[in-house]
Image (cartoon, rainbow, N blue to C red; front, side):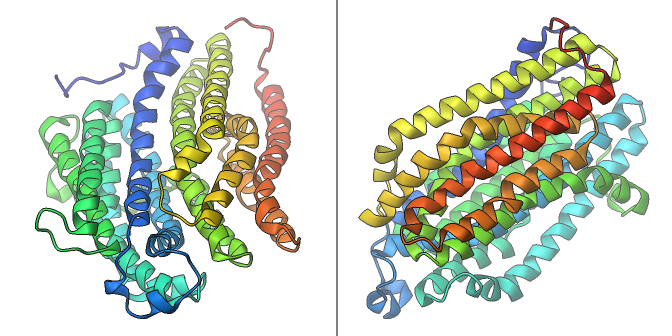
Length: 478
């Protein structure tokens, strides 16, 4: 396989049948994004099986907050999750800016500029790691105390999150190198690197958590180390592929010297993407606090649901990432027929993904949750959450597609507004209001489909405005 060839030549954007083009571009991105969901769900599965309390002192025996040791661990992972999501948000958002500028520079034939952008990307990755290193050293206990008072959850969460942040260079820099590969069209090696990291995490989790094959039993710390090792393996492979096959840019160390102009350009494009990704982190953090008013079982149930639903939502966002270049390219070409086809099929495929996800989760909610060793109450709450929240998946799918369409037209602010409505503005006050009801743990989940429905109303209005501004014809055949 020749990694030096671009996976998707640019001329296909103008000539390939749009419905096939979206699938050809979307599937690798869907696979890549879904692999990211493996890390947390695999950790949660094996952590939920923990029974040994030896590493966590007498508090693990005397506390009645949670039914089992494994459930303590899952609760700790849930509280740690927003920081991990924020890490991804900054990495992915920075990568959006890197990807756009790198591709544009190469399209202009400016190899020197492309090399400087690649060097500054690595510099920004190192700076981002330095920030999370400081978070891991100084802020983890303060952050966790804002969500829980349980001493066992605090101990486990601190242990897990400190390892994941202090050793986060693999997670952060692997995202940077992945974008350097994708920005030059080399999606296949980037996907291979992600698969290798995910498989390493899956294999190492039980070995390091339970102490198999002579490895010391490390409990929740083993889950953290398995995750970090998988991320470092992905980084090593991405670096190898970049330096071995990415001949479009020069990899000399002097290009890593920071350039204020290039850094400003990267974040001018990437900052809206960072904010949109970060909203998911803030939503999870805020809901952990709100659901904590109901009980620790509700927090754990939400954490398990969120990690399961990532497979569906990440697939939808993979298609979103295909919609943006297809619509934007043909918008630049002033080809309304293909542009409208990109909008039509992008929306259709995203809705199909979300509908399929809703059907599968509705049908397999109970056996799926049965795989995790959780208390009957937590298990039941998670099944209930799945059954209720998936009712809004078609609304969510339309919102995700609209966000991609808005970004393709260069309207990042409109996309950000939709994200604000669906992730913060509606869901927080509605969920908080539901906590005042006697059966709060059963009805609080309705806040999610309500928020998606409200966001869809706004997205529809914004789409009408864009259609008028761009003079889009709804009568043209794709």
